[in-house]
Image 1: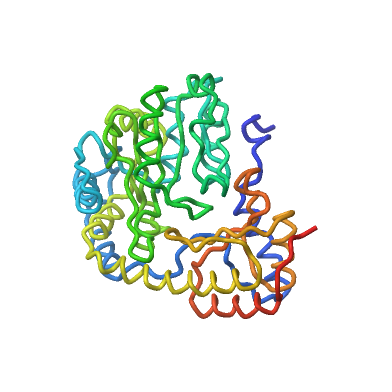
Image 2 (image 1 turned 30 degrees about the vertical axis):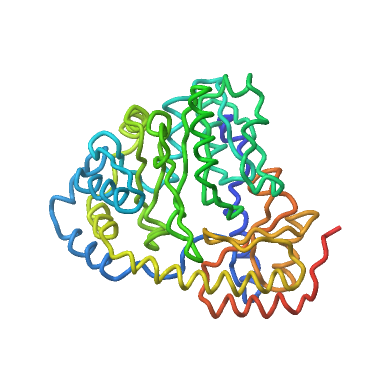
Length: 388
């Protein structure tokens, strides 16, 4: 019955985790879900109020622009200017998305022909690989290892492979590893893309989730990036708006236009009221995001101190909502043990790819008191030993 692209598609990682969690809840387990990066903090009230007003506007009751309202795209461009010092043309270099995941899933359809290849990191957000496969392409894996600080070794990529690839996907600050990239790495990446005629698709939803005075970059800050790169961004994590489904892709005008051609044939754009609320979010005081990050940093400290204290191998994240802990052995079995013995849901690293095996990803998007309870439960384990 099903097409091959569906028949051979692996179960979506978080759907499988949710089923296991629901089974535990049905048994009466007090489950602490540290698996999914869905902020528990509410969307700031001024954004909600802007949405209330926008819903009442009859202009928002009709089909929206495929590309997004020019006012929303201008707000995105202004936010990029304030945040990264990057100047964008809102008419040609900004495209509204129904969340960045939607844009990433559609993007390869504009550039990948059946049989083409794309360079995809591993471990990584599963959508990169799936999007390439849906377009009829073949994902070629770039291992992310702790020996290389979870950055791809671009020099290790076979020149013949690089020459045939059409796209390279990357994501820093990184999900799931929580690694950050340096300016030097981004420059190396841009130069690599120029040398091999590659399109860089950089996924950057965690840029504002930074700790300890750190700052994350946009790849578009790098000289020459505008010639080869686009960047996906989302309001989901920055303003606690995961359910609102609003984001943008920005950068090279030709690449943005290619993604726009696909989208105009498969969707009818974002609800106008959501875009209006997004404008309010993008104009928000920086202090709102700083206050959110203070909460997250406290949670990071709590969970990091616990995990390192009981024997997990991990580095304290400089950014993102995650801790990426090495436990060794079968990560699925280890996560089953966490759920069965302690009522804690975490994400097995192998769900992000073969090079994620042996790792567990913990999210901090639960109320602080639930993080504290998880810490109490974990500390009762004593020293964690690798699973056999």
